[in-house]
Length: 314
Image: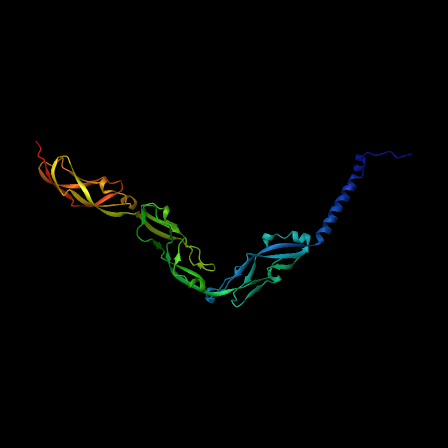
């Protein structure tokens, strides 16, 4: 006689407690075995360098790495417990300016118990030294381009402070004659007095400024004016009829933007003698120039007045 068939539910739920305990025991045993296995892990440790004092007369040219990579070996559970951000930085002593290499040693690193170092990258750092030189040099404003049309730079730009200090390898610093500011674009400036705060331009590769404060550059932008002398400007009498005018033409000096002044034609100008308020038949009347475009001014008229013989008023 065949035994009765059991349902899938009965198979699963039969001795359920014992089955759960067995499963948990298997998981714990697997975790213990797995955690005890040897494993490897790579971590990064920051570098802090102790450099020689300025009195040594030497400076380091080598660009030091920010960190060093360690390959660690140990149990998987212990390695996984290491918090990389909690590892203290390694301090390297570079005060010996005669050293040509710095070699890392395992005992320099503070690694939690249970882990051992199998590899250090880089294992060493090549060291390049140069004679240290510090100088104070004048500061020059670096002006780029030219002012807009019709404008010009007024007085030479001034800088404050006028001098700054730079330190670096003798070969780099000794060749400098002045320190330049970051460029100032003159095309961006309107007419007026301007003050700009800028930094010094980037120093040579291995040099640095002793003081990183900004530089105040003061400059003025003025109208770019040109003068031009025009002769043969006709005298025109207004307000009364004249029998005679002396002189009949005058010389005029005008001033304005070069592009406008150069285009002015004498024929478009007139030296006006206003005789409308003159009662005498003979008079000397001051002249004024008409026909100039806006922005162009009269510097002088020679002669400044005209002698008029006027027709008597009935």
